Length: 222
Image (spheres, one colour):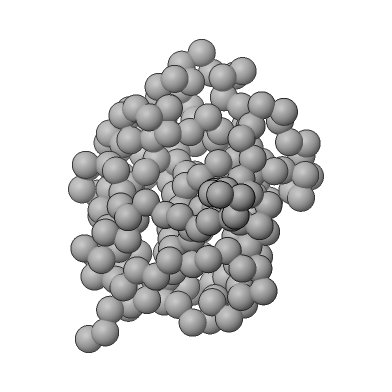
């Protein structure tokens, strides 16, 4: 049986004056170990519609911070903005998947989770250092998450690296929070698999909250 094709979004950096697409191999490794065929996607907005119909599943990876004017909220001056080309591509791809290919499994990681929420009417806390005294616990640290429904997603310890978080999940359902109330996981209960997690499952040792999420993505894509 052929492995399901899994599109993985890439980040952009500027190198020698040129935009360069990059992605940590941990995402691809997790997809491969889970039975999928990882394919890295260059952020080309015009390709979004064709990609949405060609792949069996998608992973929206982590990265810097989205500009929120397109979603009706001023962008906080202290954020580190993601490249506009990347944001435009992922916004378009998520909208097409939402409206035309809702059965296609999607896993959103960190920034990917935030983009999921934004494209579904959500809102961000754009700068946690101003609102959370314990914000450092969310920056490159392990911390616990508390499930709202253990039968859907268990509680456990995860690894996260973020200074933004979802404040309002929009049409998404909240699945888990951190002890401080930060929203840590969301899903769309009306489709087979559309899950966003604030942590990095590709760097989380816990089986169910780490590689297990990629395994569920691949299972849903078959």
